[in-house]
Each structure stands twice: as C-alpha cells, then as structure tokens.
Length: 185
Image 1 (spheres, rainbow, N blue to C red):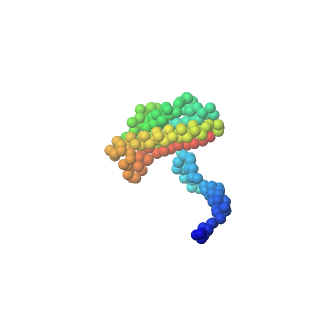
Image 2 (cartoon, rainbow, N blue to C red):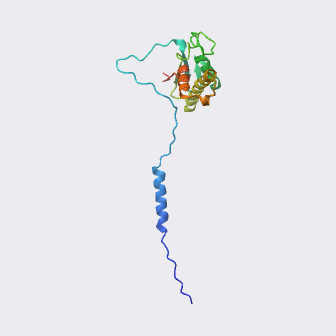
C-alpha cells in the first residue's frame, strides 16, 4: 500500500470576507469625477476705488429671457431654440456703426454697433429647466464660435483646427464673448 500524504490545505473562509470588505471600502471611498457645468471665464473683480461699469446703448444689448414655461423670448417675441443661433449671429455681426471692417452684418438700426460692443443678456426664471438653460448657453457659444471660425478662415486662409495661439487670440478679440446673466425679477 502506498503512503499517501495529505496535501496541505489553507483555510480560505476568511479570504472572501476580507475581499468583500475591501470592495465595500473602495466603493464607499472612491469619488467618480463627473464634471458638469458651463465653462466660462468670470469677470475680474473691480479694484477698490475704481468704477468698472460703463453705460451701454440699448441697441448693443440682446435680451434673451427664459420664462417658467421654458419659452425663449427675445425683445418680447417668442423664438424657438433652432432660430436662436441665427438671431444671435445677426445681432453680434451687425456692424451698425460701420466701424467693423470684417463684419458681414446688415447694419440694422436696432442691432449692435459692432462685435466689441455687443452684449448678450440672458435672464432666466427660477422655474426654468436646467436643460433649456444649458441649451441656450450652447446656442450662444455656437454663434460666437461660428463667427470666429468664419472670420479666421477668411483672414488666415486655414481651417479652424489649424489656428495658432496668436490667431485664436486675435479671433477672440475680434468677437469677444460678452454675456450678462441675471435672474428674472
């Protein structure tokens, strides 16, 4: 008869408990990055003793109001989200004072003087949905980016993916992103 030696065994009963506790620990302590929001550069604080406000002509302000029924109003007229970008582009690129050499606007009397003076005023009601607010912000951003891209293609003769940092800075100066946000009273 052969002498069979018993194989050594390891008691693994507590290993499952340890693995389960480690799993619980990492699930509870791990944070999952979920960056949501609107990427905006905030205005600098006004230094003490200086006046940092300036008077705006009414024609240079495009008022967009989002009401509690999730409707978009511009100058008391209801507009659709699809029409918003075109209205914003026409307003910014108007060239009302004929001082903008690169603008393609219609020079309407009730739109902005030039892109450097154009202000988009966005007011929202407390009951406005976040989805509509973000969608309107997206349309405003698209309008500015499309104007900048068109100007860049015309001036630099390159596609928007090939702009240098200096060119991007010039595009931002040509079409500065000026937006004012406030809660509806």
